[in-house]
Image (cartoon, rainbow over all chains, first blue to last red; front, side, top):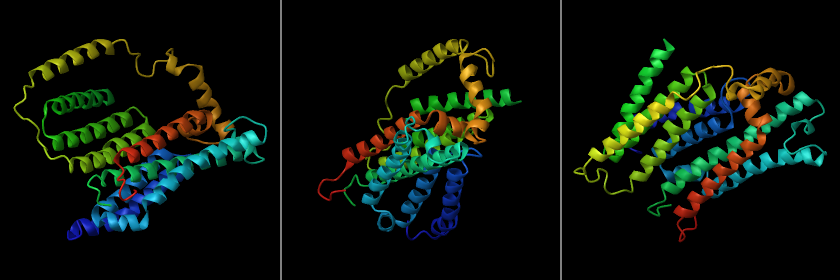
Length: 140
Length: 176
């Protein structure tokens, strides 16, 4: 796709908007529609669009396969770590009151961190599946 | 007005799914499933389920189309055996459609009060989400707060799906 001018220019214009929309869905999920799952998928689709237009080599130099594997594990570990914060302080698993002194602020922080973990895992799993499907010919 | 639009969209869904069953061209089947997902997202939007609609549009119409398309690049036969007899498929389709249309009458009415879905738990979430969690969006507070353990399970399922795909498709020589 490197020699097609119109898709390249349109992609360059549209990718910041897709990523910004993904971040909005991620961090504004408490107040409007959305959350980690949707944001992860939207960010991953923006990145996949970049890969389709500019080639996998360019995409891999930005986010390598090892990096996606690490990030998807980090997301899930972040979720479990938030859960264990409650157990350490003698409360239940995933009890967000343990995170801060104020109960309501603790809930907000807990939901924020959990959604962040979900977003990281989902986006990196989607990118990793895309990489794997494009490696069927053993090109990577 | 909404109900009429819903019926129109649902009948379009039936037509698209019939085309998907009959068609032998993989490319047009993939595009049809994308349209199917978009119409599903529109239906969820009409039913005020915005979060589900967003998920359907992003996952069903976005990512899965890309994955299907990047898979059929490696399939040599795009249009498989066009001479195959489609009559049994059509008969099966109409039998399924008829049985489901009969079963639809057992579903509860939309927004009815005395159904299990609208029982105590839902009322509790709607009334206490704002005071207990401080999150205006009830869906988020149920998903990440009240039902956080279920969401952890879902994320683990996605993680396992990722490593399974990696395990099946990995290229041992280059160590992906």
